[in-house]
Length: 182
Image 1 (cartoon, rainbow, N blue to C red):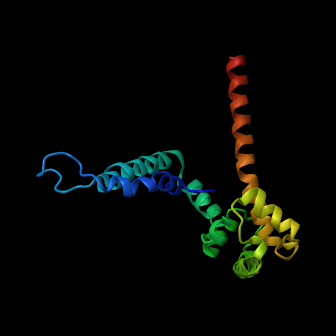
Image 2 (cartoon, helix red, strand yellow):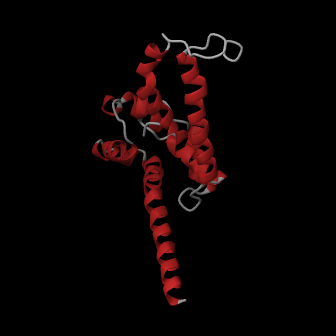
Image 3 (cartoon, rainbow, N blue to C red):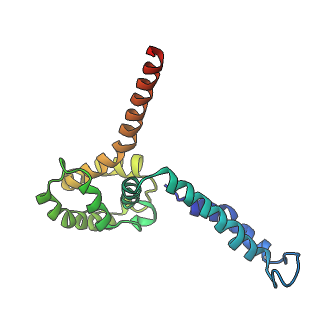
C-alpha cells in the first residue's frame, strides 16, 4: 500500500519545478522572497498532511495505531524496506493464543531467517501488495512451509480487516434490531 504522503508527493512532484519559477505576490515584510515552491511545500502541503494526521489521531486509539504501524512492517514495497523485526514481534504479542511467550522468544530468529530468505530470492523483488502478491508468492514458492510462524502472522494480519468489518456489521445489525423492537 502506498502511503498518502507518497501519493501526494508523486502527484504534486512535477509541479515543484514549475512552481519554483514564480514569486508569491504580497507585502515584502510579510513574506520576504517566498517562492511558490516554498509556499506550496510549507504552507499548503504540510498543512494538508497535518490535517490528515489529526483526523487519523481522532479515528484510532493507541492500540489500533500500534497495530496498523506494525502491520506496515510486512509491506513488500521497495524490496521490504519497511520490514522491522521489533514491530513484527510486537504484532505477534497481540495474538497470545497463536504465539505463546515461549514462542515469542524464537520469533525474532524466525523473522530474520524469513527476511534473509525472501531478499535472496529474486521472485520476491518486485512485489507491491501484501495480500494478493506476497501471500500468494509465499504459497507458490512453498516458503509458507519453511516459515510457518511468519506465514501464520501474515494470515492473521490479512484476516484482521475482514474480522473487524464483520464485527462492526454485526453490531450495526444488533442496533437496527434493538431500534425496531423498541
